[in-house]
Length: 632
Image (tube, rainbow, N blue to C red; front, side):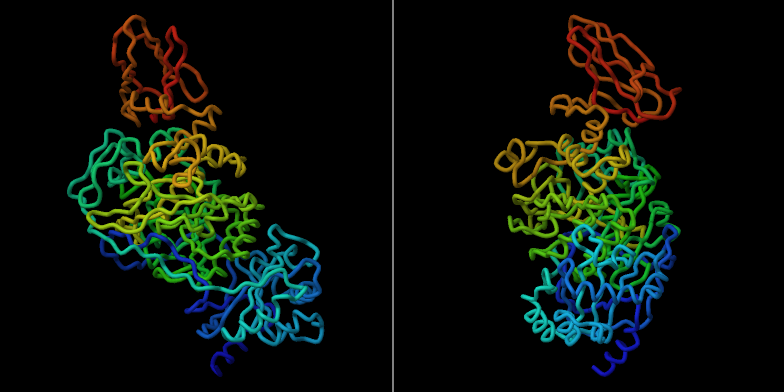
């Protein structure tokens, strides 16, 4: 304890910017699906971590890691004397704190010596000063956050972390403060364990499935979640069902993303940008931060976060490895765990508020746990006030027990979307299966919003060159996150309700077991399995396409097309059909007439400008626009 005290004395000076990492934290949240993994041997990472230019604070090199230290959240009531005293301290140290105002992570840690000063007269602060090592702010120190008068959404400016000497001191402190009039709530960190699914198999690329429509990425045909033609993936999963995917090929005809949209990923990190990994993520990382070690190095040493990042944003159609959903948007890696370790929710709460302050529009959280947390809800409310949409995993225990933060989807002030997982035949994953091994099941319940593919999802490993299969709602979640980022890329002004309505309008209903996937919303699929193209088309037309119309997408092929485009025509034995190739503005580019009973027509598009087009059929019964956008 003498050594610990020595370190703390070095750290506790007015305005110090630091945060104590506990290697044995008490409250933890973990990624769901790491156990279902197939990965080639990882290679050493010797490159430097590359990200968009962002200045970060200089953290003290000596940080307390005392294993007996304990922490809890405390939120003071608005206009309480304790809050006034604490904000006075923050303001008195403003010169030191504000020197980092342009930096990204500058929480303030007020040592016990400051809290015990003669200026501190309120009862709550006196109790705190006798028991704690320090009191730490949750979010960045900005002028509006050091004012007792200025209220932030979720009251996040009134939320602090207490660092106590040990569990006993923390327990006594919480008991003394529980009914204190200055305290809105006080809650401890509580332990949650990693949810590992103990099944795996070897990656096998000897029997590569073939696709008639595809991006040119080396292993795109293994990405059944993006383009499912019923292909079988050897040693991993049996034959699927055509169309049991997120319909991304047609979606890319509308948009492949925008660099104006930032997607935050709270996870284990991302691939280091070595020369080989840079093809997929180069110049895309922005405001990366490692909340566990207080550095800007968010390099993944686990693999789970890299898989998530590649699902959301690996560059597609570049001839290597796999394709992500969004090829252009910037990615904000926020590392809160290492090597599948536990995640203290103090780090999670900090990461959520940080993402909101740094301009993220979407936050991916492939993590969770069963205990409710007021602090997490407040952080999500704060993020929602900044325009963030948070996407969270339902969990992998085949249970209806609420899991947080996904279960906050029932609170409309949090902007949370909860995601369950489906397999390659559109059934709820129950269990998750890889080869002959199986485990767990996608959770269900009254808080589920949507489902997305989540079984045997191929992604890039932590070294940026290997490939890994993961299964779980952890993988279904970034599918929805990626689609949301495409929707925002197409229409940046959209708010949460607009995005939710677009996802709902595009979702495929009644595709799973009839006993679970009932008409409309149900507790197993929510509003249905997401469909990227149908949601984007809803933005363009404002019309929700019927299932019968959407199923006609196979009439147009190949897609993308470079020279000749073929159109399989519906039956028309007694009348001619006029076919028009139109651009996104509805202008007719090419027009043909198909005589009665002709079953196929073709268009020479070799000389057309690159872009997206649609086919319009005109006959006596009316005008019909085929739903598929053709990428040229």
